[in-house]
Length: 310
Image (tube, rainbow, N blue to C red):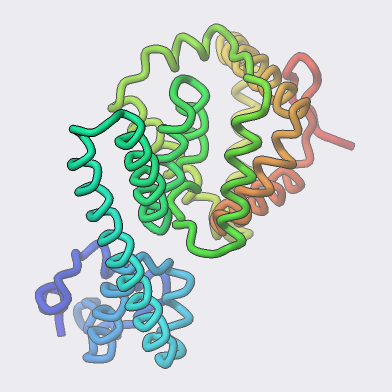
């Protein structure tokens, strides 16, 4: 069948169908006469499964396994049913507490505060298994520039729900570290940027960060080589352009100042190691970046000059 028919049956967009094909989840035949794709009933069945699983926030990587092993679909649906029942129970508890809070508004402040504290805890627990919990909480727990910096730079890795004991422990460790660590002293240029950030600006910067992360997660060897080629071209332009050098050195000074502070507070060991537990994507991203740095084989001196390592 044609893609228009598949779109009608599955309610998926053309871009989504093409994306799932690129990911190897479906393999439609190509008509040699007109080069159009022809989708089988099997393709449609898989797309319907994919659509449902994405609605359940199942990552593409796991969906690939489910497509190969259909018996995993039953397990996933049973897990989701358990999750729904747990959520119903939590929401029921929150409902009862809110009703108690409403009744307590005419009572003493102590009684009202007690109910509100319990409600706050219940609402947070209910939110933990929802996508984007970490991003929402970091904005709430750390208002101001510190929270903004965290969310902007780590937006691609803050969407995973906290749905295991290991993740729960990692999240608590991460928040405790961030709360107790000495404040980072931002360069004046950065302070000014964060000070004037609007919600629209935050969303724009987060999207840039997410787009960049997607490029590196699952990057192939040939793509790494292409990235290296582009970097070498950048160095050539940098060496011949005084304005680019000035801009680069300014960025380098800011980056160096922040990295030195982060190293002094054990940021990389305590923050990033917990984030790796909380986000599989962050693990993949850091591995890809490490491979890329090894491939480049360059070093940067104290003044920001880029040189090839021996």
